[in-house]
Image (tube, rainbow, N blue to C red; front, side, top):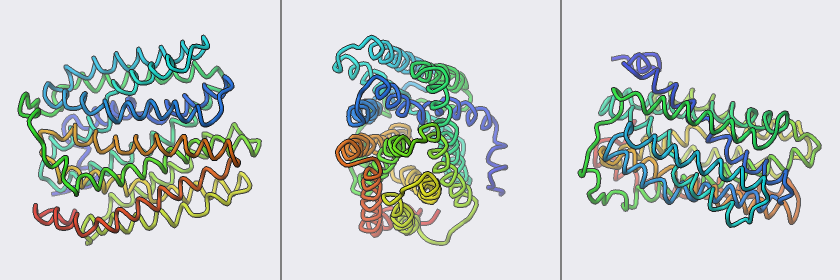
Length: 402
């Protein structure tokens, strides 16, 4: 059977939910940067702006899985529009309160509502793929497609939100996020034919594998990757400004994502003979190597090259992590499990972004990239130390190789 990208995308309903997922996911790359741009334009320092971005991410990390469990139980078409409505209310409140100069506590509360209610579009789409291709080798290609979509989102989103913020206004940039969310997420929810079958109360039972060491290890590694992403974004905003090229922020972030996209496409198209945990450990080492030049950039040209290099290991690592999560947890809890796993990224982002912001405010812009390198080193260490445990766990299900 043909398991190429083309063959997988020919599955009934797949092009529609992939496209809707792209539109609904685009704000993921825009909202954190939009928060930083809006807050710093109002005089906030980078630590405060990064901290508020972290509030949004932490709310998504700790509250979001409950919404995902609800979707597993009752179905995406019934639950996602409600969650979306709450997220939009929170984002609009955040913009309004910030423009009005409201107290930081009120501003943060609005972000808690927005982040906590936000549907995890990537998990919703991946759950559809898992239902469509359950037990088939084509699922690897499908997850690679979603990894590539994630990267396209980060190619398109940062330049888009930056352009709107600089050419129109920072509030308008977040307003564009609201519009994209409404269109993409409602379109996805309307596609009932490809949504996973609701599991009712079966999805509410205990899930001991969520607390298993292999699953926790993967989530922790994704948390370290989140620190890489959060610190990279905040530090890049500050570095381009310090170099006098603020208008190039979106382009630099896009170069990072383009490299990741290309690496994800290449990885998804090839079958490697090594077990997934071995691949994960090797990719973690590559992440350290490609991030190493970042703290030493002194010009825009150097930053562009370093960002392109640093993006090379990102998408393959995420594809591997998601593939291991799909193999480690029960299918009736998959949306929740994927949301928990990606919440690890959000927690790491919540740590990396403000810490990088503190370093930037204290020492200077490029120093935030040391947080990126530290996050990469932790990712590699977890992947290397945990490889034997992951191999044993996946071998027990006959899934040690992709």
